[in-house]
Amino acid sequence: MSYEVLARKYRPIDFNEVIGQDHVVKALINSINQEKIHQAFIFSGTRGIGKTTIARILAKCLNCESSSKPTPDPCNECSNTKEISTGRSVDFLEIDAASNTQVEKIRDLIETVEYKPAKARFKIYLIDEVHMLSPASFNALLKTLEEPPPHVIFIFATTNPEKIPKTVQSRCLQLNLKTVDEEILSSHLKKILEKEKINYDNDSVSLIANTANGSVRDGLTLLDQAIAYGNGELLKEDVKALLGTIDNSLLIELIGSVIDGNGKKTFDLLSQIEELTPEYDNILKDIISTLHQISLHQIVNNSESNDIKELSTKIDKEFCQLLYEIAMNAYSKFSVHPNPKEALEICLLRMLTFNPLQKLSEGISSNKDDSAEKKNFKKSELKVQKPKDIKVINNNIFKNNEDWISFFNNTEMSPFVRNYFGNMSLESFKENKLTLIKDSKIGDIPENIILEFKSVVKGFFEIEVEVFFEVGNVVSSPLSLKDIKHKEDMDIAQKSIYEDQDIKEFMKKFNGKIKTDTIKPIK
Image 1 (cartoon, rainbow, N blue to C red):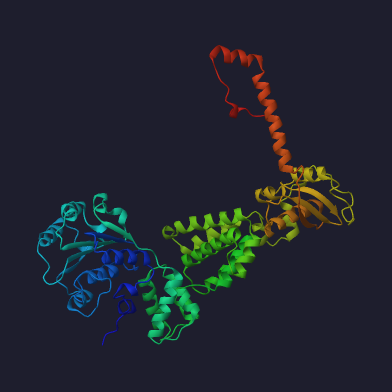
Image 2 (cartoon, one colour; image 1 turned 30 degrees about the vertical axis):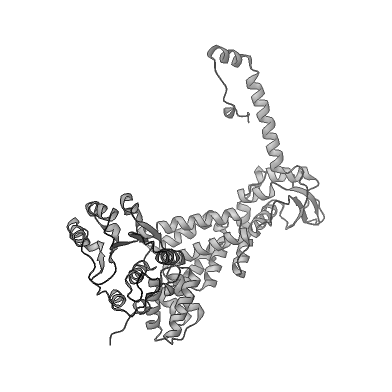
């Protein structure tokens, strides 16, 4: 006896067995109970989520002989429902639009519409992948679709509803099927495995559900493959090998090294990942997913993973969004890149290049860390008075807020660091402990931002400092003073323009106006 694949063996036979499409099932059941059945339906959605299956169940509901009228619970015992299930019903016609695109085929179909069903209540036409019909075929359908005989119902299934003409869509009731949630799909797969009496672990099922991307059929097909690969059982390592996925700890470590700006460690980890012979597009998808989880946790604090929590404190929100954009851009071009490995490598290189810590050169060169750090600071351009004896621990480098402002304005920092520390004022500096006042609106400072700031201070003063923060009233922060100075300069510039006698005479003579936004202060 030939083996029946799981996708066919466990195809739903009634609405109770359909998973993840409650909104569609409820609409159909209510319309059947109220005897308000539309003349034409469009079921749209991605592959393997139940379009054809729901169409067949609907056909059984309408033609079931167990009831004198359409019922939402087909018996699956009468001849009509059995014939629909097996594809032998003369009153339920399944047509593949991909192989019947010609207008002649549709005209032949239309000619049969007037004939009443042979034994069922309704004659039902299911046209699969209807968007592949030619424009002439759609035009031929319009009149019949608008005013079909009372015994005829059309059901269209499509993965691309945008290609269906608006004139057709307006004549149909369109129901959009969703991709199935990963948890729902995992639960469904586990029930099937228990019925099949197959040993499994939760991680292996989760991997399959995740890879299926919301498609039930894809999930069941992968499950078939995994069972064959594992010789009748599901184990995490076997499924990973089959799907080309990698250990999550390696991925977390890889992203952590990118955040730290450590190029050498990043590519060492990539080499370890390559030994597992993964699919490179899957690695990039996992990176995108992890960055998404980090971003979400930074805003709503919803992750239960310690790894995600740790990474979210290390990375600045803006930099996380930048990494996400770089990864998404790389993934969008992945299919056209001649070498998948190179596509992933260039993506990681871009992430490292735009890292605010600017440690790429530090991680891939053999120079000492200190020399690499000092390369990023042009001391000759700084105007801050450097202490005479930097080895004296109690030396008060920042005597007052003016010293802090002078240091900030004349030291090179990344935009990320400037946005945080530029809105703070000095509280104190004692025994190499720098305390800054920040506004209550500023949340926790990311670890990588603090590390860069410390390296800036060390690069100039050649001493290690500890940085502390106090929430309070920020007075005269570097950026606020810069804004005040810019406003004063703008006022002076505007005043000099408006009070200039030559400009006044020119404007009066030519009836001109001054565009205020074009006035710039003299630098």
